[in-house]
Length: 207
Image 1 (cartoon, rainbow, N blue to C red):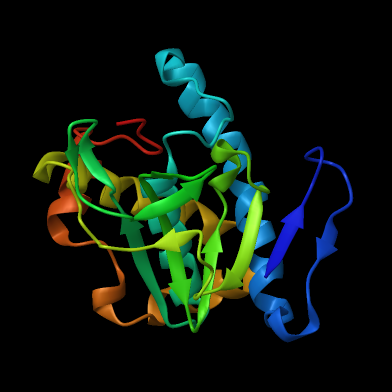
Image 2 (image 1 turned 30 degrees about the horizontal axis):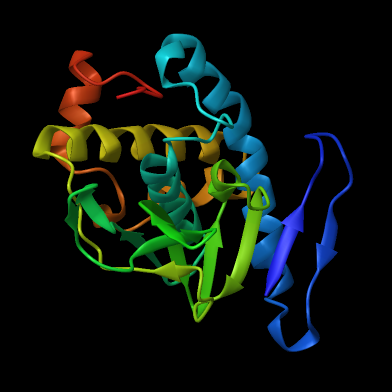
């Protein structure tokens, strides 16, 4: 298992791992860059909706953030899959041991599974390190891929990820040169583009 730790945003990163669990260097380097890209975005979301404030700026943002991470990784050639786990619909309606395991309790969570690795940049909301790249067999994670969001919320999540990915591409000179050559289905569906264009969904929406 590898956990990338940073005590402050500008602090040097400390890596703890066993040799057999060390992921490819470009993968955890990109996860770190994606986390740093998202930090001011989370601050903007909190400023727009302070009632959403949790233990960390990433709290409650795992769905849209991990979908953005998924899109960004795929654009760099990784075989990435958006994953999530929902352990319960309510305290009296249990589903099972799914999500992220925190002190013996499973919590709803979303992350990315990428070529045998889990990539997670929002688990610090549960007291875990800010950036985690760990084998897909990590017992803290269990997916049932149950999306309980309503259709409109799913569209907003997809639109947010599309907006974030466009902003990310603008920060990556090499990707800007080839983005127009990406296969058509890599871009947001027309319905999402229409929502963004008409203002129904704003860039970096907090919904």
